[in-house]
Length: 414
Image 1 (cartoon, rainbow, N blue to C red):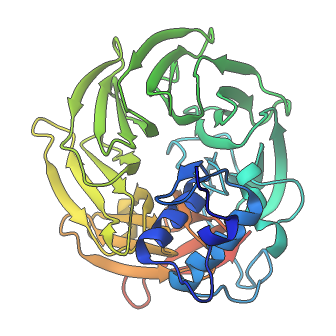
Image 2: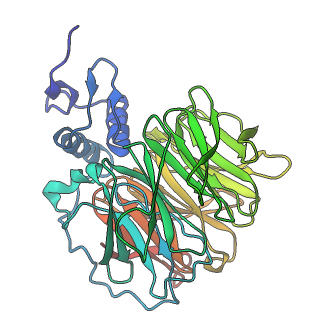
Image 3: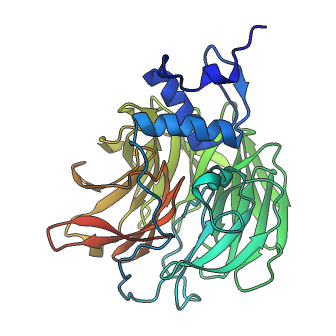
């Protein structure tokens, strides 16, 4: 079999990458998974290759990165009400915490990082993160590290009103930790045959649902650590899980472009939403449990949208949010205190965070974080602050500014 040289896959001066090839490389960098490109051999995502590929993506997509700045921005961080615990996912991703967590008087954000500060030369090492790091998000200081996984961590979910949380990994394991306990896992959950890519904790904290690229969902008893239900659907490569508040239902997105609603009582499919045109990367449910958002992959503005769905009787599509130019990686419902109308936020591989009118789909504001690489996740820190995780520059603390309407500005990064 003829194999192209390694250099032929990357950017050459005389042969610039086309949009389609560049999109495939962008997806490989963003997902950190093994890909087979059309006309090229399979690639294992090694740091050197990813660095060259991402430099090509940045030249064509988000522009050349600006000079490296200090890990914490010079702008002071205003004092806020007591914050919350925010466990996170891979590549410095953050994930939303239950709104009533009360054990964190100062407020922390959990992020994943390698030991030591990441530099320009070692930023691709984020693909090999095996450690959960707890930060104080007001100062950027490390509070604690948690080690136990043998391979890269993919997702984290926290237990409601507790200092316990779960981490999933490419080592096929899920581990349970205590924020204020030892640095070793309290419990381990083993049952998947491939990388674990989804975690969701039930509202009463008694059950844990996990999903994987092995096409299966597993339901666990948190107290005993035993698997109580298992469901498998062909081609259902799970990308994210989210438990509906106060309900027995679990929302799930997949690489088969489908959003499914599962009933945890028997782990049966309760509803399948109309298939989208692109991989569904993420999902989020509103606090009242009435609506949900899903995010689409894409490139060059094709796909790259977020979609609002009704979770009640009709379960129809309500609205779409179009304006990103690369994969939409995360979405979040914002607190009603932020604006006079319901708003949502999305983050994308195009280095942008957008705020949208939830009802009309109108983009209210766009913040560009040039040089940060793909923006992989969003989380609400408090009533006026967001945390945005980036591939290249860590966590960005964003603050809503009403001085000239609804705007978003970066006040710190770590």
